[in-house]
Image (cartoon, rainbow, N blue to C red):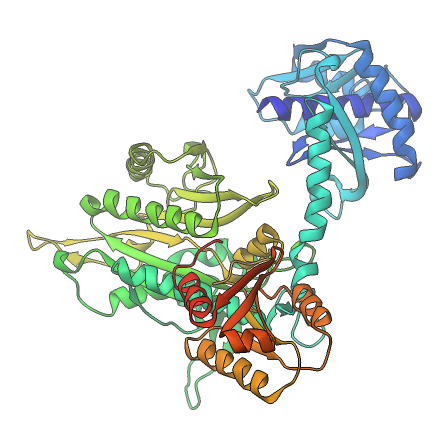
Length: 600
């Protein structure tokens, strides 16, 4: 647990202390630190609302000012159960009824696990810790909102009130966080996406979580695909295409069924015409890898064919729960920058390093200065359950990935128990311009599934061997990555990526001026620049204001004087008037900036 998480975990205990001083009958369940803060689940007849926050925070401030020590105490299971039965856990003192949620938690602690409680002042709670030394070490805090949550996430259990808050080392850091949240509201990809006409959601006719890409959004999609295809071609990838569905047998073989069934759309049952066989089950594909494995299996391979790098912008479908759907970030149809690299063990390090270098190249192109690789490993205790039961292969592949990361000098953190079921993986975390963290892409090692499909190549010694497979998706999915980019750039995309790249604006409607504008427009369009014309009678200030509102990147404003001099007046969104330039020079610069994918 980080220092900040300790502060937030401790603040959850202070929150519970304050609530008990106001409402002594409160019953508490769990109160962990979470991303950006903490919460505590409470059962209470009084419905807590934001109007109560000031009162609760005053009690919290008194507890922090008292500077009580967080005291850790180990106790036996029987002692913990007895305390819970007396109502002493998550309480200020014994009370007339048991601490029912804590009693349930105690009874479900695995045998042999150390049981501890923490005390701060008069408050005692069942807790594994850790905490700060004293309540006075908490710093700045603020309650943020209230939600409802079922105990243990089970709708058959009581519904509790979940009180959220956040805490920081000091007021300066907390204010910066809330400033970031305000800016994030302005940059919300759902809001900007609608204003800019990038995508639409149509839950009534199309369905929830199934985005429709409008023409301007599709322009961004195609630019990303173009970048990926050029980059992958240069790196020796070959492109493939696969169908959107497959037989049940495919996913049973890969192991995705039954373990991944909850995240897949229900199957379709189909009978071939005239066939005397039971109906086949077909599933919409939730991932591309099994199809790519069958492409590998379609032809014979020798060691000379490896590495084989199969790439596809494949459309997948995942049945996300309706409550988890969120704009473009969590959807049910997703277009993935996918590829699978089949290689020998000797080739693995170089291939894995090359994939990481591709990530770094993309970070540079998009101006992502802060990023981190999360190296997810397995938990030996869960082999055969959550992870493929191949302990030797797990150790070997994890050591290989770790060595490549270290030798590449890439910043990474190691996270146990979060690997894919078939091998270790790297999740790529990036931070937007305002400091929001996003998980963008993944890079996985698969030592298990190729053998399930019988994938082999003939080695130098004429024996058959199973290749390793690297799953990689540096640009993630269109949906999540574009959602991130909208917020990162606040909709102000660099020229090469902007849906509206150039608008030619006339000052007046003289025929010669209009012809000059059309000539510039034709030249730009001939070079596949997304350019349009504004030849209307509106005042030029209104035309410029409209272009700015639409986030048109570059405006070429021309009047009769510009026509006579063969120049254009150049304006860039958010930067204003950059002065006059010869027409040929301005057009050439625009084309070069797009070609080179410059940030500025």
